[in-house]
Every structure is written in structure tokens, then in C-alpha cells.
Length: 259
Image (tube, rainbow, N blue to C red; front, side):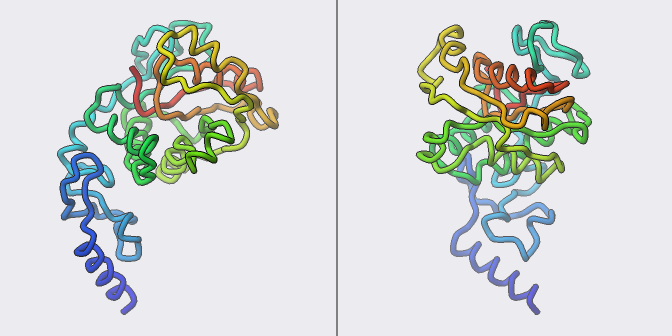
């Protein structure tokens, strides 16, 4: 009886507020048969379209996403087959980017989350990263911990959330990765990287902006550092450097999109 009642109210709410694709706004009429789409789930969680779709995206927008099949050298952007060590040995991490800037679905999702504060966009982004890591890179994630790149406390308070945290939560939910949120701290309020096009200026801007609390928790650990985007790599490089100094072994910089 309870299940039928919940199903009725779910259908009723869908009629009043039909779920639409986050990117193209097309109405979603069918849902994937997944656990989160059960009658017990909240209506806003039940917005995955038919076919090979990601949550809150129609099949058309989902299929436009070109998910990468390799990791990259963060210095020269060379593809690294089979996740082999970066060709530039001085780099403390290898880059794992699910897609590229200019992707007609990824770009709007990142913008919705980061600048329009549509937190729901973190759900398909987390699913896209899951497919990239598990199916495409075939990464043995059980050996890693997940560390989202933090915002300066004032910026996070102003925005209301840290987009990297939201994506990390979804990725952890899908994969079972352990998320460690408070070990990497942003101790310096830097200017936005968006207005800085020069790589050297970006590196100077973020220099010394991160610190690790309780470095013993990172000692001899494999770490995935998660951020939303990778432009020149200045932010990821700085975060990876302090985590490496704390004694981490293998470090992967994971982002939804790169240049």
C-alpha cells in the first residue's frame, strides 16, 4: 500500500512539474530502471531519460558527450595509454579528464553547477566521471582515496557550496570511493583564475594557497584529486605538490573537462 501511494504521488508530481533535460530543457518522459528511480526516491532524483542516458539528461544530450578513453600528461597533454606514468617525470600527478572544453553537454553542465548554482548538475557529472574511470580507464579505484579541491572558506560561504565536493559525493556514491574533504585546505584567498590567461600568472596566483592537515593520513596513499575543470593546470599542480610532500604515492588529477 505504501509503495503504491508513493508511486502515485511521484507520478502526480511529475505531471505538475515534469522533469526536463538540464541542457536542452526537453521533457523527460521515461526513466532508467535504477535504484534511485524507485517509487521511494524523491521526484527530483528520478529524472534519467530512456536509453543510454545520464541522470537529468535526455538521450540526445547524453550521446553528444565524448568521454575520453585515456589519461593525459598534465604538462604536454599527450595521451597516456594504459594509465602509464606521465612522460614529464617532474609532474607530481597524471591528468584524468573525462572530456574537453567545448563539449556541447559537459560545458553547460559545468556552467549550471558552478555559476548558476544548479546543484542537480553534479549528479550527471558524477556519473560521467564514473563511466570514465571505471569503464574507460579501468582504474582500480579501491586503492585510492578521493580528495576534492577546496574553495577558500569565504568563497564557499558566498557561493553556498563547493562544486568539487558535490561532484565528489556523487562519484563516491557510484563507486564506493572514500571521500576525504577536510585534509586539503585552501589557506589563501586568491584572485579568480578565470580572468588570468597566462599560465605563469596563474601559477603565481595559486602559489602557496594549499596546505595539508594531518599529513599522516595521506602517507603512502594513492590519491585522486577532484576538480571541475583543468585549464593551465596551475591549481591542480599546486594541490598535487602539497599532497605529494605529505607522502602520497600515486596521484591522479581528475576533472570533468580540460582544454
